[in-house]
Length: 258
Image 1 (cartoon, rainbow, N blue to C red):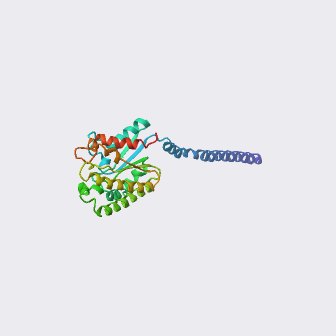
Image 2 (cartoon, helix red, strand yellow):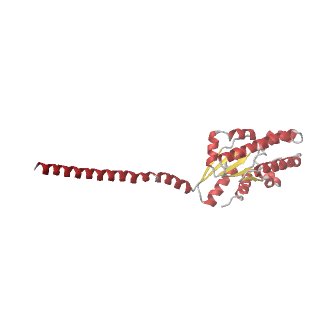
Image 3 (cartoon, helix red, strand yellow):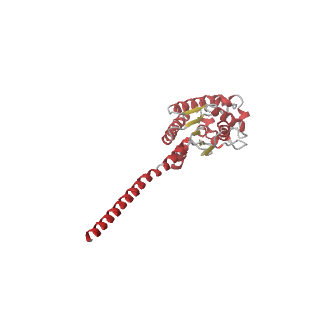
């Protein structure tokens, strides 16, 4: 009788033990089977990047980047942005970092700032206008363009330009960069034709610097203003008016692939 009781107790204990092992195995299986559910979080993030539909533009430089002189307030950057929206049917986000009166040495410092680097890093396209304030210096360039000073000024400018391009490429290797060349607002003055020679050389040297870097395109504007400069200048006879800015925007737009 006692042996039967012991056997019964033993059988029950074995049964409970088996049930416990089965339950443990099920729980462990559920735990590890459930772990991969965390992976799609990364997949979702990747999909957002791959499905990105917007275009991000960062504009750097001087008053031409700001659009000074444009009665509409858009400047070439704003006109270009409108054209990209219309032709690409994509939303466009613009960050305009241009500063009125900025010279190449100041742009060199600006692109080293952490926040500026972060903006460049996000860009699909970078627009740059710089050099006019280095060369013209509020009109002083007209007085001393024949002297050796202009050679020294250009040398420093080209060094700053090279550094700026290197910094842009350090932050973003893929973005298309469009560097806008100089026009001659003084072409109809007495020194205008001689000044044109200086500007053409300045543009040539600038284009040579930009050509060293992949996907940095020099955009000439000298010819756009050459024949009817006063038709495309603001009342200050230096900055473009809305027509002048539209010419520049259309020139940049003609280089884009849609």
